[in-house]
Image (cartoon, rainbow, N blue to C red; front, side, top):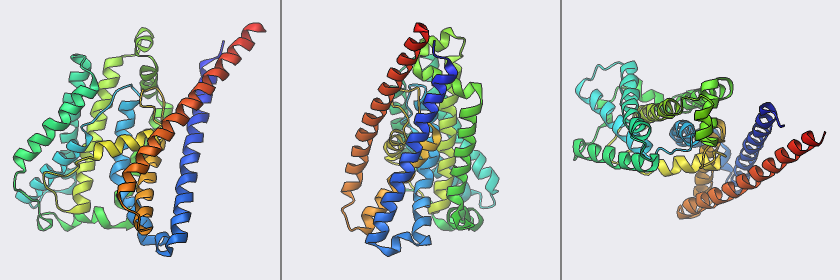
Length: 338
């Protein structure tokens, strides 16, 4: 019989292969774009790419936790938008608001959104696609009502808070460092803690996970709360980056986030994937976007290439999964023969 440890090693090998492939693709595209335009490889351009990718990296981390449980959260863009707007409104009406309080409020708003969606999914047993899609429209509708005709102006946002969006540390933008640290912490947690590994078990086979004693509903609920919280944090970072926000903030982000996850090797049907892969997927999309800009290629190709990458990634994922399954069956047969 094939041991769980051996199966786990095969899964980790596939994950490392995907990550290495993504890094290679990013470097190839970067090199080709640099040949096309020498300015593409300068420090300012790299910082811009990291800044553009930061919010999608952050949202992709939370989305990964949900996707591996065989669920999906389509509300992250709207949650980011309402968090950014309400934190901006807080600064507008309370100019002396401490930065730490802005982060607490933003994360708290996201956590509330994630809690409501997670509660309906797990307690009412409504499919996450339906609930999160409804959440997307409901949250966006609330934002449109409270933000009708209102624009948060940069003058209302404290300069110390805005610095998070444009200052750097050792040449790396702070707005990218924060999601990068979150990604590393989440990756360690997903690798080292049983409660996180149980998310994969749920995504692979929810019924078997429940029979094995895994608290399925609690784990899925927690994944939605974390996803919402990170979307709320994304709203705070959005405000610090742009220093202005209206009711359209975060529109369409959810599709780019899911694309980042899928391109990063997160299985859309659950059970496999990593936050590092999802983060690399988000960076890859931004590198492609900026490469198209310097190459004077229409921005419409950005969406077409993203779609092509999703199809290619799913095809490769299925191929690798099938080969892994065959390898496991051969190993199992060899052990039985012995």
